Image (cartoon, rainbow, N blue to C red):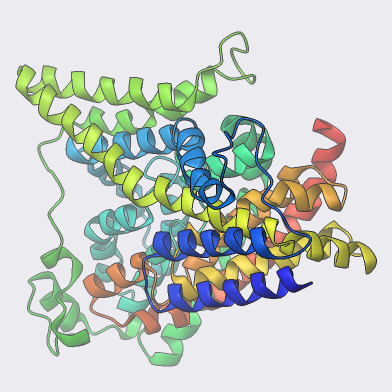
Length: 486
């Protein structure tokens, strides 16, 4: 019990420091080191080493050796996947393929003359593009350049347009998502199987609810504020197009189309197909199509990046161009290592500390003693991650911190790890989309010239509906999937 209390105290400290915007890697790493250190001296606790974790001969040094062990295992496996995903994503951005894709896919929206229907469809478009462009902030900025002016031109208010774009990646889906790759890892399956068999069925239901919720919610707030399309300030919208918006809201922030980088206009239209390359490869070379070949995610990303490099070389007839683009790929890998892989390792240290101090064992025993089943435990864990994401503004840190615990907790309530991991993973993105300190919300608010709290006021009701739907759909699909796949 003493270990549990210490773990609870350290966890509270972690939440406070991350809320105060301290570096999450540092906070989680030190928290893990402290708890593993306490496990050495407290009675009835001892640091349990994996079989392939060498013994340094000193208990204190073993704690630090655990960091080395995690980097050598996570960095070489899951870390490499996430790094290549980041490299590919940055490569597509560098050659203009991401912008070409967004430009192409947004054209059909301009053919619809019902403003709120276009607004709702914008969410579906953004969530689908998230499969190809996994960066929430990056995708949102592209949409602010392309879709936001279209919505404003139809009379949609700034807040409504910004709210929908800010939630465009509320569900971290597909093989390109680092969250999804970790969920697949802890579930003991390939990311293709995780995405097609577990994520996609639940996501389709949630997406439909979010689409309808945005339609109703944004229309309600616009009517309440008197900013519906029929009452739009067309002089303000016209001035906004020319970067001379009267009143200049939100501390002088300029509108998106005058402040953001203009979309590339000379990029070949067929470049829009390049971002689909890894998704096509991973689905084709999987148990669902060609089962005799298993293509690792990292390999698919590397091949796809090479396709982009060759396309750029042919386009400019310059090998130097190929070198410049491929350097961007490695730069992207480096960024992912710095921002994501290190965060995963530090989160695993934090989880190891919780485990060694008996925090998880105490919760499991309490759940079993109270005869809690899988559903109540899942709801509690998803709510913890959801609220953590709201507080920290990160869709990664809360999930990374608690994902290593999913298999043990799932085993304690008699379900497969994926049934616990899948709703926990989706909860993190939903929480991020209603956080006023989330990077994507702040970026969209700045470009739209509105306040982050104004956006969150409109995204929160939609995301609450998304969470309730996600939990309900997950439980229903888990029941169905257990009879199909197990």
